[in-house]
Length: 307
Length: 295
Image (cartoon, rainbow over all chains, first blue to last red; front, top):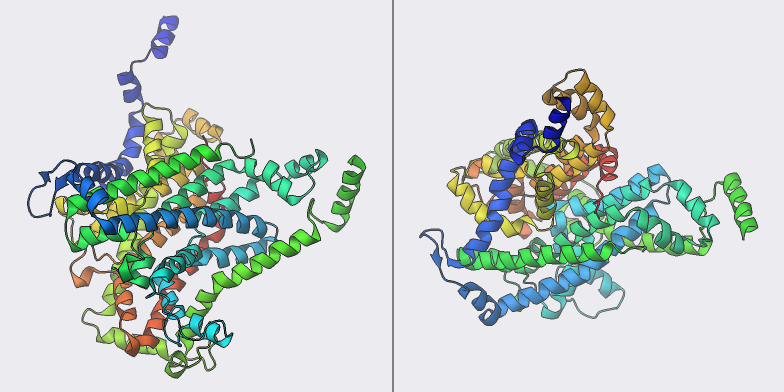
């Protein structure tokens, strides 16, 4: 009898296992119902709508690959936006990731009170939200701008520079502002991760012949905090592809010759101004694939740290 | 070599000097950090000083970062302006309180409810559910904005607070952080309660929740950071429903005539989330220690 019962438990059908876990599903249901409606379904709809013409008034009309063909072959602005976004991601992604790690690493050397203060200083810009509009004052194109004022005083430039109206300067300046904003959740994760590294490992490593802090970082610290490195990478990559607000508020949308256009500003242009939702969905789908693809690729690379 | 290490360790004990730290390295790294620290903090210093500048100093040439005659006139001007707006300013503040508080509370509760089984139960579909949540952190909300708009109109909650609150409840990173934090609670804690006959519901409320307080606070603060910057203009048409951020950004767009008030507004936009972070800083750091991705 008992043996038979045990056997039955071992061979539980999927249906029985689901029934047994009903309380687990019940607890999860509020979150996942909302998650389905506001995250899963939108992603699926975005892919679906990208093959249609949809203006929110009439029912979507199937148009096949037309949106994608138009995007990649006819839409010159999208190509600029794509190029800018990739440039942004390639530059701000790795640099911000590296800076998060570097500052977390240095800050970790300080005593707790100082550590808390420095954490606040470096993290604060990323949570001030729309306060990045203060950069408008710094980058003002006349002599009243802080940056122009400083550079004129130091005789580095002879006349005021129109930072946000000069095509070649828009992207580099936006990259600097984005870096200012980018020490966010990933940075906190790194700081916390450094705290969890077992102090005994450093002493053991010193006995094993680790001679300086750089070796210690590579052979002891980084492998020990690999999970945080993965988490931080997700945060920084997603952030670096989603740049839009700073471009819109500092350079304008559209910016001079679209020099500050990104995939997201282009998406907003079609989605909320021109109401061409099918086309905007195609843009969103491409952005989705870019973000998830890059994340997956980087995760694979990070698994090799310290190996 | 061994001798060297032993000597160094003795040195370490006496002077509490850390292992493997050279003076030159210290100087290089701290120098770099001071430079970058100035870059990070300068815009915020400008925000604070500008908010305290009288009008003539705001338009002074050459521009000066530090205020000479600090005054609160920008803030008093802001209050005067607030009383003149078409929708009373208190209404915007009330809207923001309802939206952010509703978003934070609901999110903390339902994300914790979902995190508990994901962290401590075994059931079919567990991995795929968690994988979807991790995947959702790999793209930004802009990707889903258009269909979200369609769904929200479709659910009939367009132009209500719920249009901002409900999507915020299912914020994936919150669930992720909560689940990772709950995972480190010892299983024995739950086992002994189960043996004593407690229901899962009871275990959740009286054993799990009191033990993950730092994570509640973290989820609430991160949610606040997300919601604070939202102007709600996509989903809210009625002026009386819009949050504070909307009207604040409108003031900053008011041009030269409102430069002083705009400076005060920028200060408020920045100061509120920073203050909240300061209050919760140690809890947030505690939660982030478990944030790592295993794989």
